[in-house]
Image 1: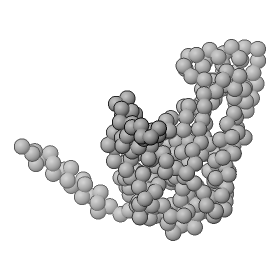
Image 2: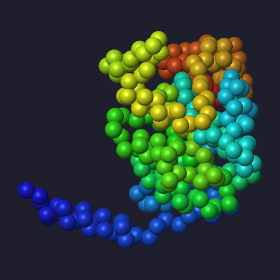
Image 3: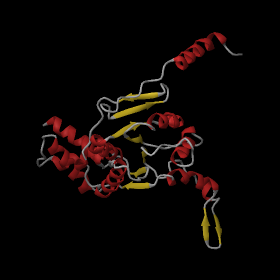
Image 4: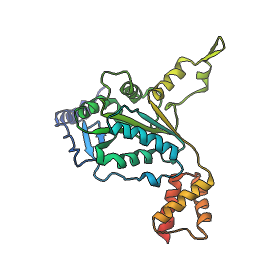
Length: 278
C-alpha cells in the first residue's frame, strides 16, 4: 500500500521545483565557464575556473597540436569537430581541454561542464546557447556508460541525428579512459559473422561503437615511460620553486610506486608534496 503521508511532502517539493523560476543565463562578458544544472534547469557560473597553460603540458605535443588546431578553427567560425579524448588515466586529457579554453577565452570561447546526469537535458542547454554571440565547448569529463543508461542515447542524438542538436556555436569535447565508452563482453564477439572473407560485427558491438564514431576527432593518450614521468615531475617542482636535488629522482620513483601509476597527474602530485616539504 502507498504511504500517502510520506508521499505528499515529496509531491509538494516537486511542485515547488516546477514553479521555481529558471536560473538566469550568465553574463558571458564576465563569466568564462559554467556548470549545467539539469535539476535547476540553468547554468551556474564557475567563478574561479582552473587555468592550465598549454606549455605546462609535457610529452603530449601531438595531442596538443590536434586539439589546438580544431579549437582555433571553431573560435574563428570555421568548421570544426566534436572531440573525444581517450586513453591512459592521468595523462592530460582533461587538462588539455582546460588549457585550450584558457588560451581562447579572451577570443570569446566559453566552457560549460556537464555531468552524466545532465546529458538527457542537453537539448535544453543547446536552446539556451543558440543565440549567444560566443562559442561554447560543452565539456563532459570521464565519460563512460553502463548498460541502458539514459544519457547514452541522449548524447548520441546530440552528436548526430537529432533535430534538437547543438547550433554552430557549440562543440562537445569529452574525455574517457576507453574508446567505446560502454563495457564490452566476450559473448558479443560471438555475434561476429564472416561473409565472403569480410568481418561483420554483431549488432551489440555496432551499437557500442556507434557513439564514439559520432565524434569527428579522436585523440589518444598513452602510458608514459619512466624518463617522461621524471621530466614532468622536475618541470613542476621547478615551477613551484623547489628545484630537484640529488634525492629527487629516487623520491619521485618511490612516490609513483606507492600510487601504482606513472603519469602526469602523479608527477604533479609528487611535485606539490616535494615543494611543500622544502
